[in-house]
Length: 380
Image (cartoon, rainbow, N blue to C red):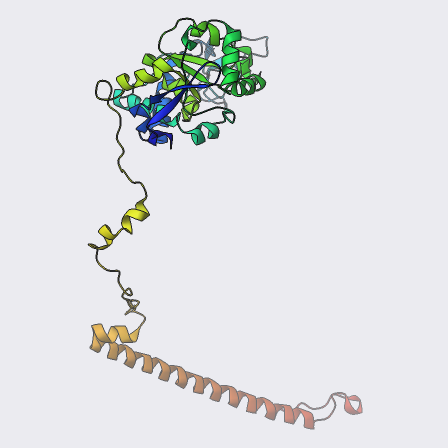
């Protein structure tokens, strides 16, 4: 990571390396995207403008309920006659031309208070992320031709008041590709915002952080996507747009050195890492930890499944031998009754079949029914 380097290169306006500068201590701050996202969400709510519907909307008509007994609902209805509107329901949120449910009010809680410590933590974390090229590229910035990240430019950049000179400087350090990417991304906004003075949307480009405004704002402000910020007034909304860390930041040499006075022993405290080594698997498997922990168990103890004494006779035998014996005796008695009943039914069915066979034999002996022109005598 860039935060582990002791020195950072300082480039001249023509792109050549001029000198080295010590890396500010704020670049060693822990990267906490959760803190940055939370603080950005809270702070971003503070520039909202209050809105609400007209307090009389949907209620600017004379209406009164007809009461009960007329086989219609008790919603207020427009009075009068002679028009289609008379007799129509009014006021309710379910009615045509009625008010909305829970009309919005201007005294909603629009703004949010955020802890100062959390805001400083988020800004420090966003600054540290701006020094990691992987995060800057992951955010979508075109920095393939940038000389180094973080990019520090010395010389007379803060006195560059002409856009032509600023353009040459950005091309020399390889940062103009990101500006062209922003210019090509300008599109018409989707939705009704295009009718509300915010017709176009565009990606964010480089952020120029300066110490003294000797014309640098006039020189860089006209490029699409480029923003400027004073090092003493660093803004999380600019350092992490959308709550995503990794903004491409161009520092002037004086602003880069001033970060050590703003953050550190003389200024704001720098957040510390909760863990110096975040490789938890390596910590657990280290000799120092493994030498004091209990050895791994060979095999877990197997527990037998609990048997239900209501259904299992062996389980009942352990709890109450008397009840088990009584249940076994009852089971045997049920089997005996079942077998006895089956024998009786079989014997009864056998006797019935025997009498049926005898009756069939008698019938077969009398011959045909209409023998000799008369019905045969039925044997009883």
